[in-house]
Amino acid sequence: MKHIVMMLVVIGCLGMSAVSQAEEVKSLRGHTDIDADSTPSTNKKWMHDTKPLARQYVQQPPLIPHKIKNYKINLRNNKCLTCHSWKNARISGATKISLTHFTNRDGVELSNVSPRRYFCNQCHVPQVDAKPLVENVFEPTESLQ
Image 1 (cartoon, helix red, strand yellow):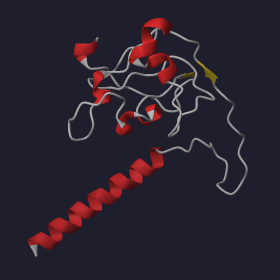
Image 2: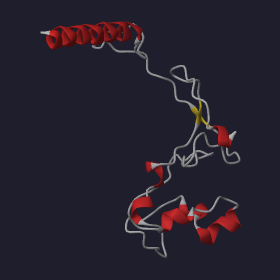
Image 3: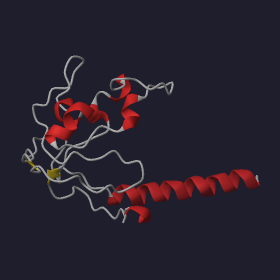
């Protein structure tokens, strides 16, 4: 009997916290009903080419400090490699691809970029000049400050 009562109390507390959290959540659509058309968002401006952006946590993939619109990355082409490959980085002044990108899942070092690291946008993202959609109180790792 004690277990049943305790379980009901816990379920009641969880239900109350869920209700209070639901009241705090606000849609990015504003007060527009889900079936109504909302105002389309404006296109954000890509950042102009800048020096590498600071990382916020250990092992964070570097952010892309330039626009990548129309960059083709598929099985046959990778536009990123025209500047960031080891061969071209010195000439273009771009950052070289990390050595970690030349190791396959079994730890074998390859002479070319590993297939699992070939599609750059899986981890690396460009930045736009836009105000945050939600408040952010994230603090970078102390060791990186």
